[in-house]
View 1 (cartoon, each protein chain N blue to C red):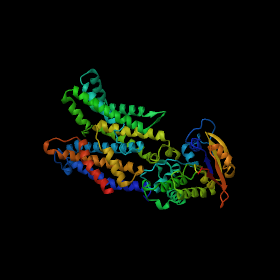
View 2: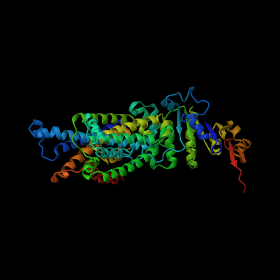
View 3: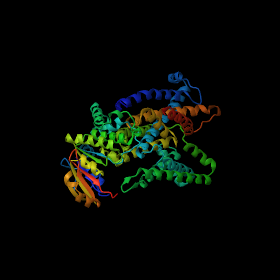
Length: 229
Length: 340
């Protein structure tokens, strides 16, 4: 589980899209399990990497179950007809994203937190080796943040890689195994949470002073902004 | 929806097939004169001629046009992510109107004579031929102006289409002012959407166009569903967004072109049938597309039968386009209210 952090306009979302093969980089290459992402057929690429965007549509008329099934699209043949196995996988993905109780409700009627879990289920159903999430917790309250990140983390522990663009450094420290810190389109630091979440590194990246203390329960670095009072 | 898309599509077709059959039966038995179906099938004249030369071709025409406009409406609504899109939204109605009005304006000139022979060669009337040319030109124009930086922007194309349609109606009004009223009235009435009697080869050709278009769109139905996620969301699921859009745009335009050639501008069908089907069957295009084809066919066959009966006493009939709106609008509001 890798977190992509950095100040606004650092290029985090752009890098996330490049990693998914949705944007072509100006230079360099992207490899998905050894193959050039831009040489792969689109559907094969979508079987290798799933993407959860920052602005998924809110007004979808489809039910949560149908949206989860959309994740199976890269695996379906002509006419896009799903087999019972695909339906079972979609249900399993809904359960994994803690959205099974929403299955038969139209997505347009769900709250922001519920909707995000449904879209996460769609990404899970895609059954890709890598999951890229662009600020998945931006619009969520604390409990929904925890639900979403926990679901992604459980999946990562079963060998599915996850790349998360995150703004919340406390969440990044608590949830991720590795962090990549960008500033103005350049790599500033990369490594374990303790190596990247350091007052000197963050001070340079964000141009503001922060304190970092170990979390009393887990020992993970906890970033606290220093606000004069 | 707990059932799979295939099962739901099958249910929709099983429910709609009898509806189409009823509509066809009504369409065949209603008309200007009374007709005995039994006598006609035994070959008794004039019933046989009325059935085989007049009523069957007309019902077939209505079914083809209704199905074509409905699938085109579904496709354009999905493509533009806009529930207000109708088959003529890409400037096709404006183009058809300009073409038809111009064909009247140039009647008698050298160009007019050339046009008549070109139209006659493919079995169409000059007005029909000009309307198809006009709508095709409009579609190409809107599609070209809707592109920027190498891809189609739906909002942009939609705006260009709306602006072009307004421009075209202004142009047609100007032409009307210049031309003799008796010349233009027939054209305008035809443009309002009129079902007539077409030669068999023309019917077959139009039927084939609509069938192929509906087949292509149904094959793309899964991708049209994914387009609801946005261009990027669809691309992340392996959809070639640009190609899907191009192909469904041209399939829909071909179906609309065939409909315009045969009947002018029958409004409302392509807007209201898809929405009515969605209200009942849900948003999945794999179900909505085939169901709309059948629903649209039944709707227009019935509307045409009603148009023929409604004004029988006056010895005339209103354009079917007027009937589709008169019938469709209240029906749709009723459906909408029952749903909520």
